[in-house]
Image (cartoon, rainbow, N blue to C red; front, side):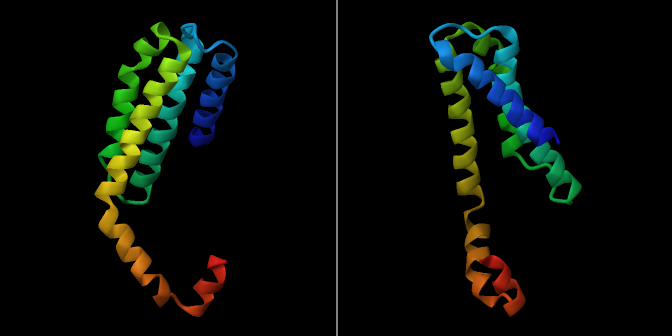
Length: 123
């Protein structure tokens, strides 16, 4: 549910920003732009904690960085605020790609070793 709420907040901010992206965002859409992504990432962290995977580093740090961008998102043009949020998200994705490269390679290598029942589920 929090993931969906984060997506809705972000979508609300985008629909508010896109008609006139050159002006600064009001407080509520600026919070939706930044807070929606933060809520989504923190829901991922909570899910990871729930399944016993630990806290992790990337998503909590990205959430903190995004929260520090909240005052900036209210002052700069909407498109600039969106760009800053995108930069943080791309940084998080880059970190996760580099950090978990070996684990993903191991999973891909074992893909052929799945039982026949699981192979039918892949399609």
